[in-house]
Structures are given as structure tokens and as C-alpha cells.
Amino acid sequence: MAEISTTPDVLPRQRPIRRGPDAWRAARGRRPWLQELAIFGAALIVYQVSRALVIGEPSTAFQNAAGLIDFEKSSGLFVELSIQQWLLNHLALTSALNKFYMLGHWIITPLFFVWLYKRRRRMYPYVRNAFLAANAIALSVFVVFPVAPPRLINGDGFVDTLRGVSDIDLHGGVLSGLFNPHAAVPSMHFGYAFMIGVVAALLVKHWALRLLALSYPALVFLTITGTGNHYVIDSLAGGMVIALGFIVVQGWEYVWPSLRTAPLVAALRRDG
Image 1 (cartoon, rainbow, N blue to C red):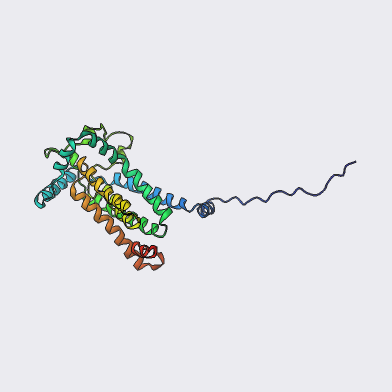
Image 2 (tube, helix red, strand yellow; image 1 turned 60 degrees about the horizontal axis):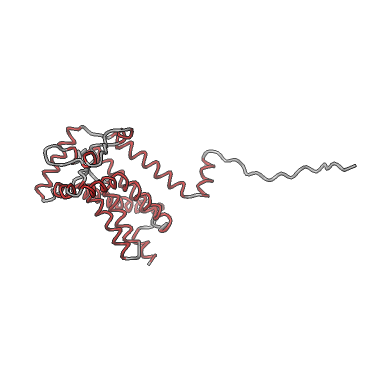
């Protein structure tokens, strides 16, 4: 007769089930990039919703646009119509730039931060914080200085190439409620491109890659100006806002040294 074992089965040790903050900390420890996704996801939601909530009075936006055009004309910056007329003589290029305007901004910016996180980790927090600070500054400007874009201006000869050439209506559809039609200044399309171009040009080694990086903001400038979405001064303002974002982070880290990240110049020196 076979003996019946009275020894209890040895069960595999199970990990304690974590919930709430503990689960998040455990997941973040295994995959630190989850925190960055959460930060950018939250920032994107806040930015888009805030843009929609701070839509100013149309009359004020058009008055500000008229004043901006007068300033550009008096200072020699009013070249938007010349750029747009040249593009309208090359409709295939105009159509390509319309698509680039709608998609490039959303593809290249995330790819830049992924590359920065994976390949230049010391500099990533510094650039990320400056980027977030710049977006906060831009939202403040949208509140106090709403400006209608050139494509909405009648009587000056501007053309809405998105609608006229590519049949793209920014003011219709499901997502139109999250779009602020009076947020021309500053152009964060150009601001992001300026940041990517300068930072990438400083970090990459090969001259061809540096040239490619610096050509990106130039392409974005041509796109946003030629398609009638921004004035020249919008791009200048976008570049200034990005620069202010880096200045804010520098000041922040000076006041709170414990929060200091790796400044771009110092990290470049270490990388040699």
C-alpha cells in the first residue's frame, strides 16, 4: 500500500500585489520612461485644453493682427505675401507643405525627445523642463494677446492654402473644439523647430547631421509662412519664447540647486 505524504506542497512564492502609488513606483522603477510619457501626456492635455479655453474675442484678435501687419510693413518684415505667391506658383510643393504642417510637428518633436532620452540622457531633463516652461509662457501670451492668423485676414491678399489647395478645414470636425484660431503669436510650430534644430546641431558630431538639424527650422518657417498660418513676427516670437524657457530653467535651478539638471553647455563639455 502506497504511503500518503503528509508533507504540504511547496507553493511558489508570489509577489505581493501592489496597488495605487506603490504599483506606479514599481512600474516606474522597471520602466523609467513611463514617467516621461506621463509628463508629456499630461502637458499635452493641459496645453490643448488651455488653448481652447483661452480663445479671445475675435474682434480683439483681428485688431491685434492688423496692428501686427502694420508693424511688419513699417519695419520691412512683411514678406509673407511674396513667400505665399511663390508657393502658389508651385502647387505640388504647396500641397506637400500643407501635409507637413499638419503632420511634421507631431512626428518630429516626439522623435526628438525619444532620441534625446536614449542617446543624451544627461541633457534630457534640462531640455524637457525648458520645453515645458516655454509652453507655459506661450499660453500666457495667447491669453493676453490673441492674434488671428494671416489665412483668416480678408483684404490683404492672404490665401488659406490648407483649405484652398488641400481641402483641410482647421475649423471643422471633431477636434475643432480643441483648436484656438486666434493663437498665432507666438508660433510654437517654429519654436519647437528652433529648439530641435539648435539642440540637435550642438549634440550631433557629423557636419551633415548638423546641417540637417539647422535646416529643419528653416523648413518650418517656410511652411508656416507660405501656408498663411503665421506671420514672420510669430516665428521670431516663438524662438524668443523657447529661449525664455531655457532662461527660466536656469533661474529655477539657481534658486533651487537641489533640482539642478545637466545644462546643455556643461554636458557638451563632458561629452567632449
